[in-house]
Every structure is written in C-alpha cells, then in structure tokens.
Image (cartoon, rainbow over all chains, first blue to last red; front, side, top):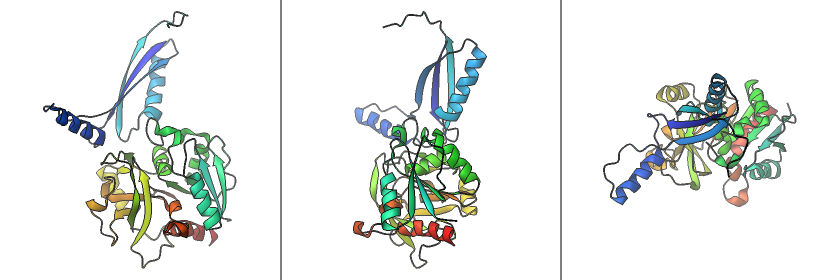
Length: 90
Length: 233
C-alpha cells in the first residue's frame, strides 16, 4: 500500500484571484511583507498495490485526467509505502 | 432531421427544468431529459448541457460531470458533427471535456455575479446565432456564476479570433466592449464561443432564462430559434 500526497499548483502565468484576495487580507492584518500568494490543492489518498512503478502509473493517470486540468495546473506527488496491519486505527 | 432537444441532468444541475420549460412551453419544441448515468441520447438532434453545480463543483467546475457515462455519448455525438450547447456549468463541462478550448477560473471580483448583461453578437453566421436579427447589436441575457472568468493563452485567443469562434462578448447596451461591461474578468470579454467546426457552443449567460415574455426579456429565444432553423431547414 502506498500513501500518495499530490500537490496541484496553478501555472504561474495564470491569474489566481483567490490568492490576490487572500493577500489583501494579510495587508489588513498588518502583515505587510507577503507577496505572490498562490492557492493550490493538496490531495491525499492510498494506492492499494505493492509495486511502486504500478502505483506511480496509476497516480499519474489520476492526476493528469481528473485531479488537475493540464491547461492551467501542474501537479507533483510523493508516494510513501506502508503495510496495513489488518486492524483499523481508531 | 427532426428537431429534438435532449437536456442532460447531472446531480446538481439546477437549470435543467428552466431549459425544458423554455424549449417545450415557450418555444413548443420537442424535449426530453437525459439522465447522466444513461448512455442513450434518445434520438436527440441537439444536446443541451444545463447550468447548475454538477457534483457540487467539487475539484473544479465541470471536472467530475465530464466523466459521467452520458458524456461519452455526448462527446462521440459532437465529434460526428452533432449540435451541442453548454450553458454556464454546461459550458464549464464542455471545457473540461475538451470539446471547447480554454478554461474557466474564479471571477476576478471573487463574487458570484447574478444580473442581466448585454452581449455583443460577434458572429451571426453560426448555427447558434443566425436568427439574431441584424438590427440588434446586442442581446440582453442574465448571468449567474462564480467561475465565469474565461482564460486562454495568447496563441489560443488569436486562433479564436482568426477562426471567428468568439460568438458573444460582454458589452454595454450599445455594444461597446470595455472593462466596465466585463462582469468576471474574462479575456477579451468572452462570454460564449464555438468550436472550430461550429457545432459545439458554450456560453456563460443563460438564454433559457430569457425566453418567457412574462420574465421581461426574450432575447434568449433567438439562440434556440437559430438552432431550430438550422435543423429544420
């Protein structure tokens, strides 16, 4: 089993109205040195395979076809392996 | 070919009934709903993707609806030259599906924009605009969206202009295209485009909300009449 962590960022050339608005909030708070705020997405999920190459292939497909829109976003991800113990952690 | 509109219903569509009402009760056209889990287009000659918030707008607007079973049928229908119109969320779905070029981002105001707007008609020689009377420079149609800020890179914008794919641009009442009349920050004030082949159209404003005379505006009728005229003649 692999834990995937996907980071999706809007391309630098594309305006991020949310980032601009949030940064205005920073100025109102008195935090004055913040620049270039950009808002992206962090997505986590498990990939239920044992082979890392197979996991990468699946995550790539998920990211490029659904999680990101390649016209305006770039994605990167990390995979960390873990062994299910058979017991659910409560 | 007989005229029949198929209105696709996604979970979260909320203008499907408005579209059905305007087409059936106001314009007297044959219409049927198409459920997103089906694949049968029920012999529709025009597919309409309605406005709303399909799948709660999760991830990106239109991103999940694009993978609904019915969309495979809609994509092959469009690729064979079938007429498809996407309104508001329907436009966003067409962009995600790759049937129209570009992307939609958050309104530059960050506000949900809900009001009547004027649209300059940029091309009257399309399936969707041929019946817009030539003495009218603009049509008045309402918008209601939070993510209608059309974005395309400069190469694509040039291509859209060169191919006359820009159908509607936000303007003032006299047809002047300027920043003041742009409700969402769209590049080149783009409100509606067609694909290269001219059989797929997406627009953010809601023509189905401008059909019934009781509502005080009927310019939307001309878009549906254009489509009907094309099919029936």
